[in-house]
Image (tube, rainbow, N blue to C red; front, side, top):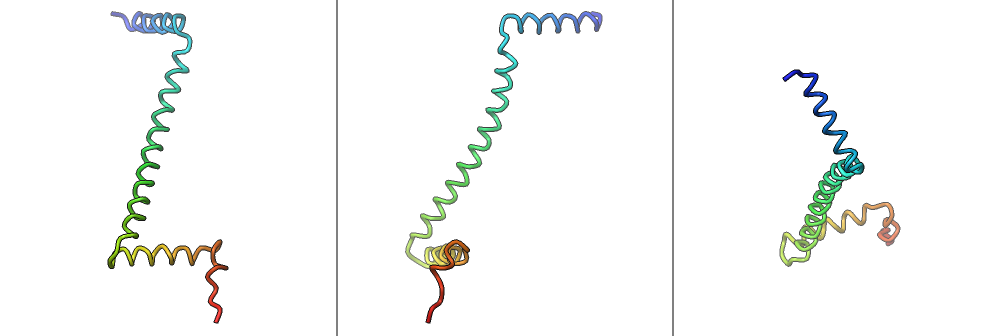
Amino acid sequence: MDPTYIGLDIGLLLAIIYILEPNLPYYLKLKISEQFINSRLLIYQGVFRIRLWYDKQSLRPGPVGRFLRDQQLRGIRNNPAYREFFRDEV
């Protein structure tokens, strides 16, 4: 088959699809953007699960829980927003 006819056939097919369903390009754009949103959602879910696991581990008794609690307290003390609450006044 001649390549010109193949191009015309594909163009005719796309024109027919566009006439029958004019919202198809918009639908495809939405489906592609949906994939990006779903991937970001999975990343945020993973980060949230890790944070919850970390908090649960810090509440456990024992040396690991004590170490994680100390890490969290050190992070709060070094935060400039909370520094005024942890002034060393003797």
